[in-house]
Amino acid sequence: MNEFIVIKGARQNNLKNIDVVIPRNKLVVVTGISGSGKSSLAMDTLYAEGQRRFLESLSSYARQFLGEMDKPDVDSIEGLSPAIAIEQKALSKNPRSTVGTVTEIYDHYRLLFANIGIPHCPNCGKEIKPQTPQQIIEQLLNSIKENQKFIIKAPIIRDRKGEYKDLLQDLKKQGYVRVEVDGIQYTLDEENPMEKNVKHNINVIVDRLVMKDGIKTRLADSIETTLELADGIVVVDVLNIGEQIYSEHLACVDCGISFPRIDHKMLSFNIPLGSCMHCSGLGTLMEFDYYLVLGNDLDLPLQDTPIRNIPGFGSLTGYFWQSLNQVATHFKFDTHKTAIKDIDPKNLQKVLFGTEEEAIEFHFESENNGYNNQRKDIKSSSYHVVRPFEGIIPMLHRRYMDTRSEWARDTYETFMNRINCPQCKGQRLKPESLSVLVNNLNISELSELAVKDSLEFFKNLQLNEIQKTIVKDVLKEILDRLSFLDNVGLDYISLSRRSHTLSVGEAERIRLATQLGSSLVGVLYVLDEPSVGLHQRDISRLIDMLKKLRDLGNTVIVVEHDDEIMRNADHIIDLGPLAGESGGEIVAEGPLKTILE
Image (cartoon, rainbow, N blue to C red; front, side, top):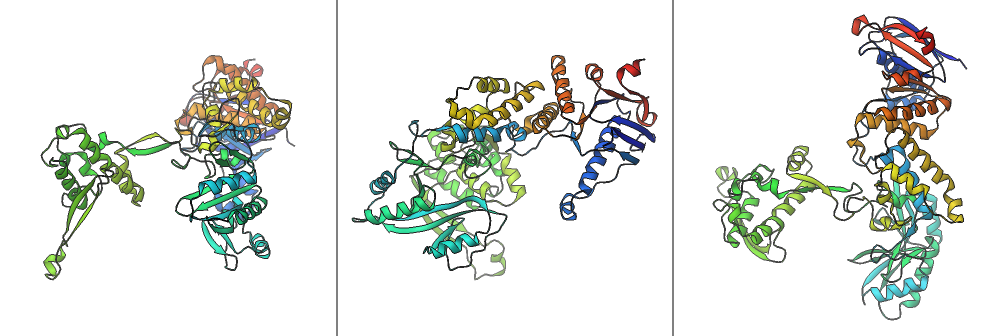
């Protein structure tokens, strides 16, 4: 392999047809004043051509999804490796993206908790243990009411891709009649095409029962069959109540709660198996703020508040204001005259959030708008109804969830604030996932620790010999990756921090730490001023990281101005002499010692 990257005739942007020879597997600094052509050489020429060649090596089928890249304005580049750029730009704006997911440390946390985590009951907090078939049967006999219908299901496929034609045929041969695929029941005689690249859930319908005397023997047979078929798990679907999971593996005897076997999937907030059902794993919710809905001026009546600006609430003759006026009459105030501050606080609470069990008599008039002018035979209609009032805030929330209009959604959101999910308290996961503990911390609590505290936690983690053997490799990977973050000056950051809240300097150093954790070899890394935002005391640790990246067998090219980084470089390329059209030339190149001489 070539020992050098040889660039001939580079003319990208303001580069002046320059020839450059860059040693491979070295730390190379490209420096010069702003606008001298540093990024044109490093990013727009070297990195761009490295990416373009990599894409060309892919199949035509893959390239059609990735598009084409323009060739940089250069005569030739020899000895170029696949290139990765670590730029000054924000990480993903996806609200699901966190420092832990970007660096993949959270994935290793999931493996650790799945292997040595101790499950606890989310109700009583006691450690939970496996349940016997007899205990499951007794719980069902005691919990399901007489004459209640229920179905015994065997969950044989959970969140896995495939068509499963052979599996369904085998089930039919075994005598089963029905399956439930992604929540819909089918007979095994029906054609049930499943998309190959979509994740599916398949339950076998083992038995349909009605709770009554003498059912215990049949119930026991069905439960034992299901446990054998579904690897120790039973799903019992009680009509009009819902599903309950029972497990031979994990159950709280005191509370009668069963859990599926712990694996890394139930510890992910990005899939339904683990994510909080209330916020879908986001940890936050958009909620209407009644201070924004009503405005700040409490001397105004309801009809003069900002609520009139919300889609569907502007017309005073529409359904909403017809309803609200009659609610106001019920509570003895006027939406047109009574100031908000003069409405009884208890009644205002009911207006905002609903009257619950308190029914109100409503009379609605429905006029036929322009039709009355053309069709005299069409008359306005009216109807009476007695029911509770839904409440302004619940009504707004329902309409926000139902609307398909981006404009309406954006308008609604101006009256909303983002709050922590009240169910998971911002921790993103289901209660059973948050109840798996390692040294009395769940995975979310551990993710909320700063990197320096997380390192301390794992260095002092007390494990028995069996646990040490099980998680030896995972623990090493966690410690290495946390150390990389610590060494680039990010010891204060928590893994739960959302990616979009990071500064560009923090984001760049996280990318650097992630690349060190990936241990790639033979790659060209191009970094854009990684020292931005770093205190001088952290520069030496950054230099050590860059050298580690080089020592793995990579070429590291850094666009940089920092003196200390330049003094530690193996090779320097100084562009200039000035900016713009007066730049783009090689002022000096070579090892620092040679340049100084």
